[in-house]
Image 1 (spheres, rainbow, N blue to C red):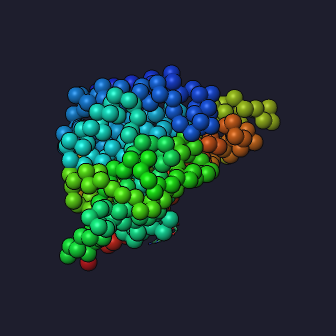
Image 2: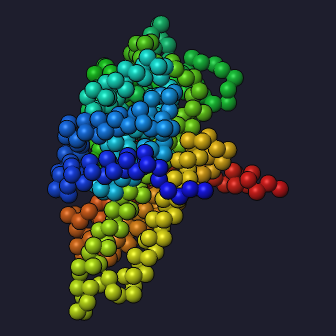
Image 3: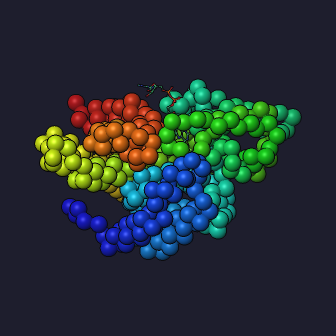
Amino acid sequence: MDFDYSPEQLELIRVFREFGQTEFTPGKVLQWRRDQGLPDDIARGFVDRYFSFEETDAHASSENRTMSVVSQALILEELSRCAGAALPFQNDLFNLQIIGGFADQKEFSAVLDDYRKTGRLMFSLAVSEPNAGSDTMSMQTSVKQVDGKYILNGQKTYVNNGEYSPNILVAAIDLDACGQDKYPMLTFWLVPQESDGIRAVPINKIGQSMLPFASLSFENVELDPSWRLTGNEGGFRQLFKLLEFGRVFTCASSLGMAQAAMEDAVKYARSRMAFGKPISTFQQIELMLTDMEVTLTNMRSMLYRAAYAIEKNAEDKRLAVALMKRYIPKAATEVASTAMQILGGQGYTESSRVSRIWEDCRGNQIAEGTDQIMVYIAAPLIMNKYGE
Ligand SMILES: Cc1cc2nc3c(=O)[nH]c(=O)nc-3n(C[C@H](O)[C@H](O)[C@H](O)COP(=O)(O)OP(=O)(O)OC[C@H]3O[C@@H](n4cnc5c(N)ncnc54)[C@H](O)[C@@H]3O)c2cc1C
């Protein structure tokens, strides 16, 4: 058993920490939240650094040319820790994982090369629907051939950058496929935003404001057959496998944000005087800080364990990921909430970083599979694990 980071991982952490500390200053982060997005030079800065590790990342996936899941988790943890938010990057890395998992080499290379060149992903991802969130397989958005043309109809929600990105990667059921599979035939289409019949309406979330989301409707949108991704016909099984990467990325960000809240709480507790003493000397504050540190340690262990299980294709990876996603987002919200308590009235203002961290962490208890859905996944695996 080895609890140390490797020299390569330490270098990765160093590079992204330096990026976070120099570029993600509190004033800039506040502005980017108001703008609901990052400026071009910051997006480029991330992508340049990300690809600079392409050759040295020992566990990088040759299958889709992205970094190993452990390395990606370390990057997101570190940036979230510096900035209190790294949502646009978390989103990019997950979207890349999805397209890499469904596209063929040529389609994926075109997306990756464009991302490397521009620092911006050329598409947003449309999976969740107003009536199909947790229950992904009740998806209604569909493609059907009418008079020899492929026609798309349906609605999507929580589409990241849904109003702005030039293309939308739409998950849709192929109504003409009549396989024997118990699952409906899931397909992915890279549809230009400007196509006739697409309408986008922004969603006003209470947090995670560095990334805008939208609801999209598709009404008789005519699809070019070449827009369909053809690299993998694994459908829902493939999607569920890829969602596990998204869960690791969400938890990495949650951990980084909770760590940032801890650092703000310690700093404040040291300097804030009450009853003639720094509040850090009060036993109840010590208790809060101690419990926060215990939680952070557990979060980190679960994150690395689950990411490692995916990387090694371990037998128990599904359970490790479900337990991680069950534990980390909720624990992160609690750490952020306790940090807010330590900062007192200041913590509850819009200008305090911990209040925004709390809002962002809370959203992660719903995104990428809710706290409850993780029980739904984990419980049968636990029953199996413990046998008769
Ligand atoms: C911050 C944020 C970011 C998001 N980002 C994305 C994104 O990038 N892409 C995307 O496609 N979607 C995204 N979503 C949408 C998200 O995936 C869905 O909101 C989530 O899957 C829950 O679906 P729902 O909202 O339809 O709730 P429902 O599925 O209707 O669930 C409502 C409640 O019922 C519970 N529930 C449902 N089924 C069960 C069950 N079997 N057992 C016990 N309880 C159950 C749920 O846990 C929840 O508490 C995001 C959501 C949020 C809040």
